[in-house]
Amino acid sequence: MSQTNTRQGDIVLPANEDLTDMEGRLVMIADDSDVAEFALPNAITDLALFVLTDAGDEDEDVSARPLSPDRSVRLLLNGTCAPGDVLVLAVPNGTDDGKVRKLPTAAGTYRGIAIAEEVGEDEQLVLARPAMIGNITVT
Image (cartoon, rainbow, N blue to C red; front, top):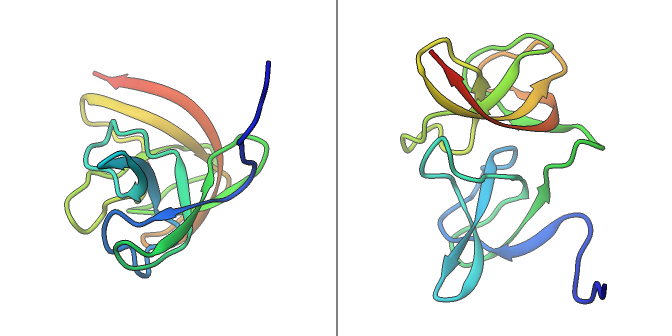
């Protein structure tokens, strides 16, 4: 099988929206007239599988690192967490878009993205290990 035109490591794409000062948030690849761009998630089930490492304004090139279980990352936390907590996307509301939070106890379906490796406080870049757990249903 041929593996041409592939990349390893951080990816550089234009920002689909203003991502200034949003390092540590999760972003997804969005389609803008057949052009791949990074955007903040719009739903807790979005495939936001990249952590923003170099932010910028709309249409500027920004960098993001694909989540991979072979290396830990620092993710912007909404709320608090403890080591071993499953981290999921925070509810996108215009303020917490792209942040993570510990798996809530409220009923719903959430996408497990990472495991916290340290105690975390609100707005901290918490150390986490990507785990790609998939959907978790809380009843």
